[in-house]
Picture 1 (cartoon, rainbow, N blue to C red):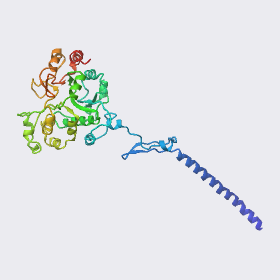
Picture 2: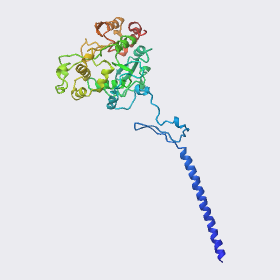
Picture 3: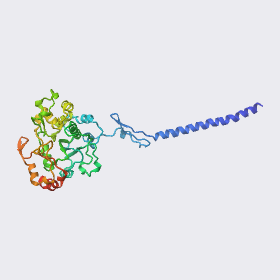
Length: 386
């Protein structure tokens, strides 16, 4: 009877042991699969200055010898001294801070080709872009281009010249006579400063034209010992009449200056302009209601701080002889050889301590209707083919 009970108990024990054994093999197999799965799950995180640069998963990485493994990719010198493109997501405050950085070591550990930064402040497209394309042709590496246009401008609707393609900086709305016009100028300067090879900075409008070929303008700018920011004292309502008494004592009435907003500056003065908060904050607070900050901020700031380094004149010719709030506009019928020659050599001025007949390198305002005749005369009169 006892043997029968024992046999009966073994009938239940054998299957129970089998269940334990099968469970052991099941979890053992799961462990192998689980380990193999996570061995193939690679997470590659590269972190620089607290920012995740790269993330990859489910991509097995090849095994590398210890000597060739690197967590952070090499950041070459070119990436530090020249941005890949002009598009970024920096705020104005971040941009001005970044562009105002100056190395303590003055001697560069590399060679650069000095460039002129041509900065266009426009409402939309650069209207005379075919003329500028002809002007820049063959001089790649000696210039850079930056365009500040109205944010609503839809560039896809315009068949734009390739030299302006991809050169639009992050822009904001500007209004004639308002301080945000100066903010746009500072935005252009700050973006251009990010490229350390830019040594001269020229502000132009969509209605500007060059009066000489590229080589002449480049040489004139690079060899100049002065900056070209127009600055003069003008009595009357359109000069001293725009001064606001609350600007004192930082800016006093006798220090108030007027001038064209179309300037040409070197890198040192450009750095001072983007770094200035003392004087510009006064303009932001008080230069409103027909104060025309774009005609007074730079002339006043440069006159007060850097008069010895400035010529006091602009290199951009305009015609104010007809009166009014805006200069004269020139259409197709105005463009003749005689007219262009007059603009090129109409007066006498000083350049590096000597008299010269080349007083203006650029001119405005020219309409798109003038383009065909400008293209006709440019090779001969402006010598664009030289």
